[in-house]
Picture 1 (tube, helix red, strand yellow):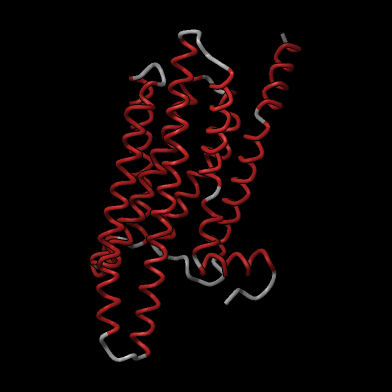
Picture 2 (cartoon, one colour; picture 1 turned 90 degrees about the horizontal axis):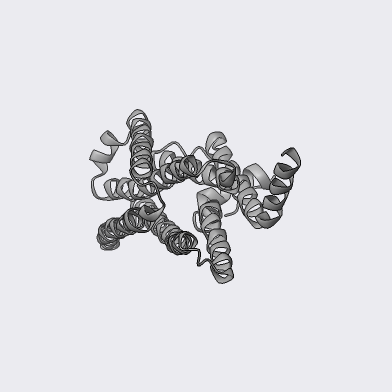
Length: 284
């Protein structure tokens, strides 16, 4: 029995080597990102948006750590962990968009609602809701068929809501930018214009991440749904195996690549990474 288990583990490692590589890539990037938040060399990460992005990084780090080893757990616990983390990730994405909407449209309310203690309490609430969803969906559904119906629709709804908030925020940003352009070009106005530009870039980045998340998750769940159906009917084919491997890699990469998107699109993230990891002066 020991020899048989050892051979099975060895085959598993060889067959899913690409998952280990993508998972390691995601773990490294998210650890670097979280370390940048903790050390905060530019003293610019102590705000509600950063706390939510850090929570999203924890979700993605968990997927990168867990997914390569999900077959080592039983089917039920594997589903529970996956649904909890993905639910927390999706709720966090729309929370970031809502946070930016309040910041731009209702700055006084944002200052009251999104202080440090309240945002940490809200993050705890996200994980409680995600855990309830994970246990309820998994325990009430003995198979994976719920993945295609409930959670895929939930993910699409999150993206649509995020897009809606993005439109409202963009309209407000555009209006504020236009009002500033009609005023004198004072130092205050220039700083306000810079702030609005940063806010617009950040909101677009979150929308991009939401779209990438659904693009990575939805096809994988669809293929997995078909795979399980064919497996039950004993009609599984080699083509389905290849598709599942491909979209599984895309699923993993979706959760691994967010820090790279932040680095490429957001200047303060890029400067912080340069200071911490390149040992040189930050980029202009």
